[in-house]
Length: 252
Image (tube, rainbow, N blue to C red):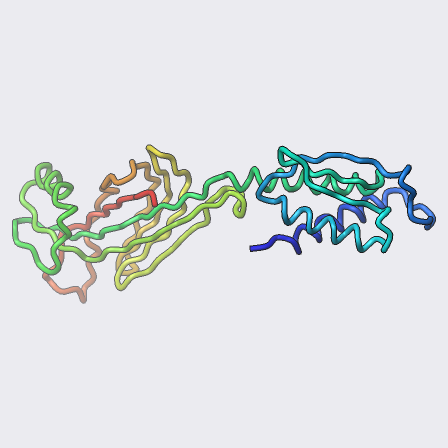
């Protein structure tokens, strides 16, 4: 994908900004004595677009080659023969390219969150869909702490979030997802190799909300909390005693 149009615009604006600093009457094309030869260290990824853009801008100034020429040099250098005024604009462009190249080195991160809404009831009888096998060890610890329980999966939601510090000041944007009975709103706060931090708000049946700031290791299952099942007068008698909110985060 070529960036030439963007670079041409940047360079043209840079040259115009320099020209506007001290307007001068129109003069004839400068002689070779008025030109200066300078070298610029341009990031390799932007070399081709830089040269194409600069050639286009220089040729747009006049038909005379005296307004500037450029050529490649060893070590990623670009040699530019131009007037001091043109060199000011070229210098501004090179600084912009270095900033762009540095920001491109910031690796975008992606993380996937999986949320399970699990109903629990006293006894060992389970009703409805069974929780997935990957939650077996988590639910076993719940049973050890609270006694015999039967579990049912109410709903599972999965959200993938991506960060790019070049586009978003703090890297992450809030994400929300709604299922048949549940909904999740989350904002990722920080992602590292060892810990993932996020702020979440979970809603069940539009009447039970649970919010928390969480920190968990990649791949870890975390029981965010539990709450009594929200009962209404028109609810069926057969319902869970309480709800477990479980989450897992994975680096992508």
